[in-house]
Image (cartoon, rainbow, N blue to C red; front, side, top):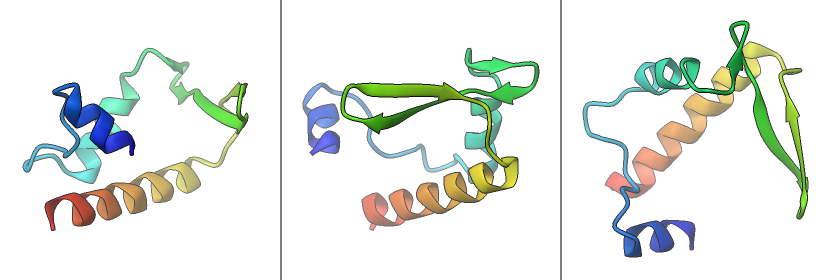
Amino acid sequence: RGSRLFQRAGLPVVPPQEMTEDNFLEHMAIDKKVIDGRLRLVLLRQIGEAVITDDYPQEVLQATLVADYRALVDQLRG
């Protein structure tokens, strides 16, 4: 559903062909939510209740992002 909404708004839903998992992580490292080298995540605890945290194992975040990125690319690029 989210992808359809983005597409209708004319926004990209597929990462550029040349973008890799490492590129994705590099871009996140310069995000405005990075403070003292730690990315602060905005996580949804439940609808209407978000938390901001930097309390997570870095390797778990990286593994999750890589797995999600690969699944998204596989799904959208066919």
